[in-house]
Length: 397
Image (cartoon, rainbow, N blue to C red; front, side, top):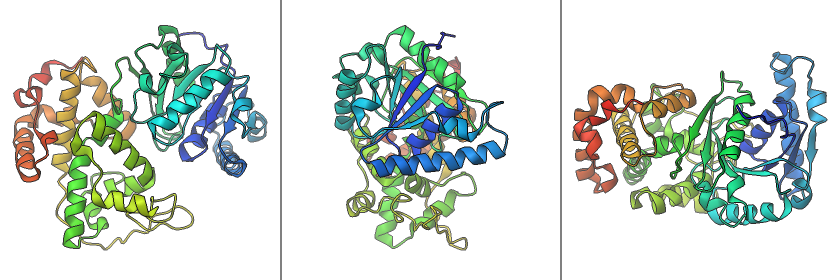
C-alpha cells in the first residue's frame, strides 16, 4: 500500500446526495480538512446540515472512530463557495457535479489552474472516461476516476480508474485512499480498473439492460400501463426495481448517462421518449418530487402496494443482457477474467453477478437475446461470440 500520509486536505466539488455523502465518508476517515464547494452558499449550508445530522446518527450507533465525535468532525468541515479558494490548499479533489462531459472538462481545466501542483484530481463520474474529463487539466498524469455508488454511505464498492496518462503512483494513492474510507454497509470493496471504458464496470453491467427497459416503458405508455406495474414484475427479486431506481438516481443523471452511452457504446441506448418527456418537463424523480413515481416531501416514494403486475419485464432477460455485456468486456480486454465483474456486482448490489448463473444458462439466454433482437430491432441485444460459444467459462481470472 502506498503511503498516503501527505494527503491531508480534501475538497469535494458538488453537494448533492452523492457529494455530501462522499464528504461525510472523508470526514469519517479522519482527514484533516474536508472542504465543501458548490455554486450557491445555501446548497453548501444545506449539505453541511445533512452531514451533521448523519454524523449524529452514526455517533449514536457507535460508528465513529474511538475518541471522535460529531463536534470534532464538523470542526474539520470547511464551507467555501468560491472554487479558487476551496482548492487553494488541498492535496486531493473529487468532483461530484452533473454527468455532462463539457461541464466536467471545464471544471478540470479550472482545477488545473487553481489547485496546488501536487494535488490529485478525481472524478466521481459514473460513465465517462477520466482521460476525456482531464484532457484540458494540464495534469492528466494526476487525474483518476473514483466512482462511488448510491447510496455512498452504504454501498461498499468504489471503482478506482486509471486514465491513459495517469501515473502509477497517483493510481496507487487513489487505491489506498479508497481502502481507508469507511462503508456503513459492510467491508469496503475497492475495484482496481486499469483499462477504462464507458460506464467502468459496475454501471456498464447495471446499465446494459437500459435499451430493454426503454423499449418496455415506451410500449407500456402506448398501452396505458402504469410504471409501477412494470416494477411490480420484478420487485420480488430486486432490492430496488428499475424505474424506482431511475427516480432515486435522478432522471437528469439517467438521461445524461444514457446520452453518453448512446455515443460511446450503441445508438440503442438513446433515451426513451418517456424519459425524455419527463426530463424536459423537469420531473426528475426524488429530487423534484415527481418522476416515474410521486415522492413525499421527506423523499419517500408513494407506492401502491396493491398494484397488479404488468407481466412484461423478464428478470431472465436482465441477466442475459448483463452476461452478454460482461462477455463483451472480456472480448475487449477491459478485464482479464469474469471474477472481478461478479465480485463488483456482489459487493455493489448484494446480488450475484451475471456469470454465476450464466455459466449454466448461456445457451438458453443467447436464444432469448436473438428473439429480443428480432422483436425490437436493436442490434445491441445480439449475443457476442464469447457468450454464444460459452468460452468465457475458461476466463475466470
